[in-house]
Image (cartoon, rainbow, N blue to C red):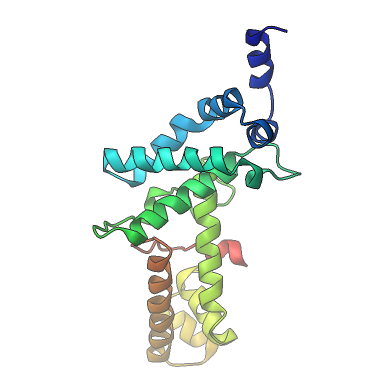
Length: 210
């Protein structure tokens, strides 16, 4: 089999097989095939969140260097495609960049469309990752509060009840509703900022928690 035929066969292999080839024999062709599959999409993903061209290319270069050096750690038995994993890793690198950057900018959650709609047709690996991360952060914050506080928050922020409706349902004052929601929202904003999100989208994926 000549070199051209060998490359054509490799192009038909799954991501997992290509990662195995990189891990076991430092296969440059396998690496380049993976890059051809995802390189431009990941570059656009970096560019959507980072406005500095030099930083975008640094993020991309460091990402692919990591893939080359750590391919053996990225192989999962039941996952032939690395697409979701790659976008997960890329999004984490963007968040890490903003956490460590002196010059922070606003990163609205609206950059990732349809976060509150898990079945949306525009779902993508990067938006799926962000949806899941926000859901986990929200769950973690709400777990610190009583069941009553949690239900009040859900009525206000996910079910879009008025304060009067919520107060009537739980037989407490409107002032108490405002106070409880305000405390939770303050903690939630803080935790989202720590995770790399710098504004709060209205729904916060609460529907997917329930």
